[in-house]
Image 1: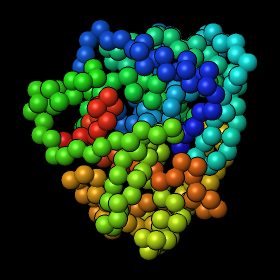
Image 2 (image 1 turned 45 degrees about the vertical axis):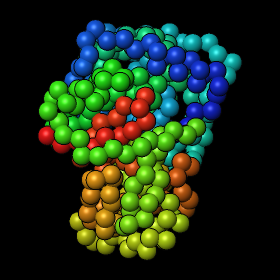
Image 3 (image 1 turned 90 degrees about the vertical axis):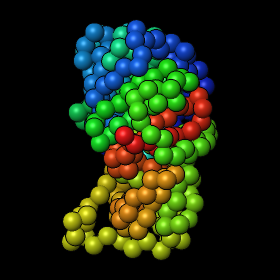
Length: 297
């Protein structure tokens, strides 16, 4: 499943941004299990909840059924944001709920409003933790070990050194209105892609696939078969799979990478670097320093 990618409502964005200053920790650093698809367990209102960490989503989204089950208070508003998903479908949420008691490991976040998605819009999940939460911390992602470490901003370098991790390279991050972007090499060509842990698959525009001369994956092969992008509004978008000979992120090189391309129109946010790549490597990020760090044990 692919989560929301854009919010359009100034008042809601301002409220969500307040969460960046409202996350407090009783002890940092703190670790938590994290699946290769960036799925994690958290607590909301003293109850367990399952989320996906989504660097491609500006704010946190919550299943309306979960909000009702937890008894979260509805937030009155005259302006609901427009949510645009990976298929390009736009829709307003069912309302806003006041999220309180959000805990990740030893970290507690101050209450904040979250748009509500229709019940069941996120199968198997209670919600999406977006950049209003992710951006409040520095992170060490040890994806081969299925672990993440939350840090205070500005402490990434000292924490990597204290753990004996070796920095292999650094890649600048570029913040834009619709996300955080990083440059990668695709078959020798430098391309800017959105850093999107909520995207299951790395996705390229049709134009880029054509310019790179990528060949489609054999439908009868191990990587073949149908592929679909699923938006938060329930829309399906068929995808075609292509084989990329080489992808390089800083000093890290991956070979024989399968990427996807939407059929019938590109995703609204352009090229995406998804969990299929980010979920298999060791990397770290300090949003305040504007860089992604590749590290090894």
